[in-house]
Amino acid sequence: MRPNEVGAPKGANRNTKRRGRGSGSGHGKNACRGRKGALKRSGRTTRPGFEGGQMPLIRRIPKRGFNALFKNEYQVVNVGSLNRFENNSTVGPAEFKKAGLVGSDKERVKVLGTGEFKKSLTIKAHKFSASAKKALETAGAKIEILK
Image (cartoon, rainbow, N blue to C red; front, side, top):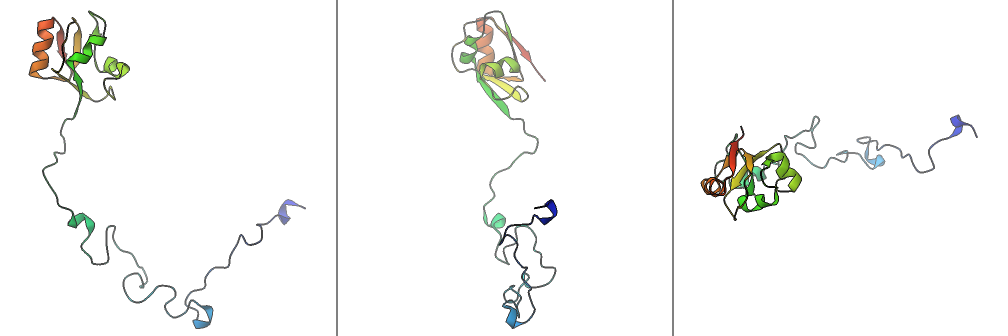
């Protein structure tokens, strides 16, 4: 057997349906397109989301509220979870990521005042709540606000 003699196995290739070639072909008259409507016509396309004239799903679902395009979302770190870091060290988003406190060191971080804090650290974050600032300052920690 030579490479030019190798072909597809038996039954792998089928003959194409010859549509619209008379009733004897089994695909005559409507040519497998059904009756009337946009999908029967040549150049048959409908826009995305078109449901045949029925009110589309995107218009049936109620729209609620206001979605700001450029809102700032923050990853939250509680003051109580900062006790795991060594005393007199500097911690920021990269350290929070290594400790598993946040998912990404690229996104913004906000420190909240939940829990007790007993160490003196230098903490870098994008935002601090009022209760977090108070808790950190009473413990002797330094705050650096990132941009």
